[in-house]
Length: 384
Ligand SMILES: Cc1ncc(COP(=O)(O)O)c(C=O)c1O
Image 1 (cartoon, rainbow, N blue to C red):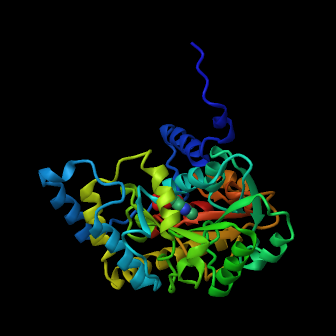
Image 2 (image 1 turned 45 degrees about the vertical axis):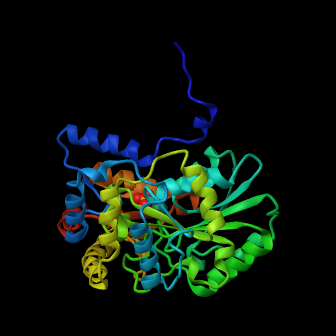
């Protein structure tokens, strides 16, 4: 037998982390205690009300059946209320919200819905690698737009407009931005809206980090006229510590959302009802939930800043999100070199910025998803 995967599989590689995790597992098997400061999966639990709702509703024998593709009304209404309360965006819960099994699958669904061979897609460099992978798997051509520190990691839309954009159909943006922690602002979103209209490009903002170390959560849809040109993905993975639950959403104009639903309904069969009902509770967490979570992340961030100081890295103290992004000193050839060196000498894993694209080559990223003691331990090891 010689059964080869489809040629499209040549377009994507194994995720960097899965390869690195194997190396870390090998080191651990040899008795080396590796401290992993790499992976952005919240270590704190969801609110007690959320867990309670999951446990209680799972006891009902009637709650285990297939579910509607669009989720129960209470779930979509809870998403709509969340958007109204925290983003001042009014969404019709019947037509403008599509629950997702995490926002990551939404990236693929949107790509499969709107892209095909011959289309071009604007993808941020540095940026979340899934935008590129999903675009390629959908048969489209990736066109990177470079972000740089001196522009606050916002794209230069005037420069971009000088290029031939006639084949560009979709543009991924992700503010607050991962991995840099940069925020957008209203003026930028307005410029983006006009850019999208002028060039007939669908904008998708991937917005899972807006509640982490950010005093002013913002949705792209809060900007006037944006619904005509933009969709937004959101998620409970980071904001509610529910990464493993796989709960996210797509928000936007009914027509765009229903097109994505047409694709998605051929892929899966709706979300487990107790998850939906528990997510309703999570979405109703009071403002104090976010404040308490952020107080913890703040202390961690301060400790990671000390670790970055020790490595002589430079960083923006105003960055948002669940990571610290920092520029490496000149003496290293790249973030990969520094990361490998620290793994080898101190058994501490730090993510090299280059995995997010070439514009991240001179940076490293540390996740805040670990207790302060772990960062202190890493500091001691690196000092040694
Ligand atoms: C920028 C970005 N978008 C999307 C995701 C995926 O989030 P979810 O858990 O909602 O699928 C991540 C997760 O790391 C991310 O960093």
